[in-house]
Length: 274
Image (cartoon, rainbow, N blue to C red):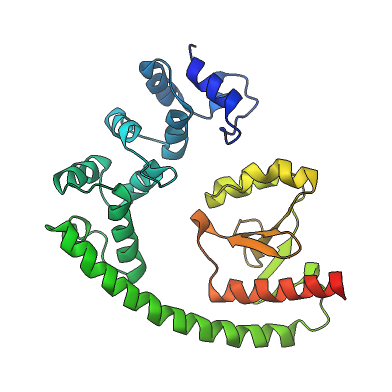
């Protein structure tokens, strides 16, 4: 089909696309017929082009064209931030606003949007999404967000310490891998392909860790909610200690999850070091 650039990038790039052993190129690339035709119109698409379509699902040709030419500006896969905003507005309007306001780095706009979301602002309000003076709005909300996070951090720390004491009392004598507390439990993947599904559901990169896990270079564990045991919740990497624990779109741990992980880590270290 003439996808030479894509083929070359796959051969040279270790962080390449996840392909399926499909019977057709559509199944292999995990795109639908309309998306495949968009790739054919490009002529010789890149790995990034395919990633955009895989993440987007249904997308207009005009929006695909916009996303192909935006710069990541130090933010991995900036196109995802544009696509996630479709719940509030259109990609066209975001792109037009960023250009009109002469916003040099797109990530400044999406940082601003993230602050509003976290602080509970009405994201359907046009004045919140597209303030008349972005620089002033960005600076004002940056200060407000700092105060908000400082207050939240103090509350989270109090909750974490309270939960930690409670969980240590409740799980006394329980082994790390049998840990069930605060509505959560932890388990190992049953097969390597689970890592891929975990990464796809939570939108993080644990799917690329399969080779490391297979070699024994690291260990990946899944934290699940007892009320929904089959749904990915948080993913934990263990290498003599907790290296990282990430949720949806790499979000950090809540106080509840942090307390659970802290208890798990302590029990694991006790088991290893006595």
